[in-house]
Image (cartoon, rainbow, N blue to C red):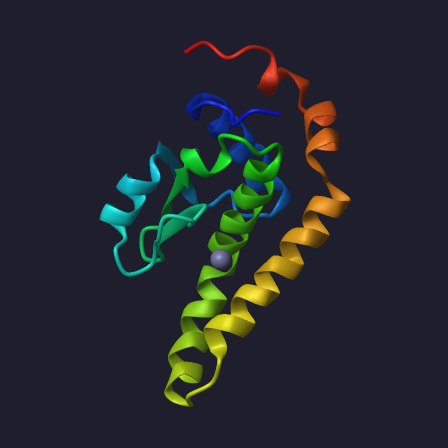
Length: 146
Ligand SMILES: [Zn+2]
């Protein structure tokens, strides 16, 4: 399906927050172009970056920025990407601690870490693929008003 609008994203996030047990987080979403994403996160993003979640651990606030251009032609990937970013939010507590320790020890932490999140995302999307999510939450996608 085509990439949803902001209001629909917000509803999807609410449901996923429950599944992932991260209701204590306040999660915002913005739909932006790849150029805007790169301007905002010059060190993290390039033109092909699908999304970035900026987390503030002290305030339990996260802002997910979605590169809408990335999803122009593709179906369904927005959901996998959203699950991926929300897993980053879920792991924030844990990862902040281990990052500080492991980066000191010169490991390939970032790579291993992204592989781990990808594995979790595939597992999650397998247990709850978009089709099932839509079936379980039909009201969310009823019709979007712009
Ligand atoms: Zn990631």
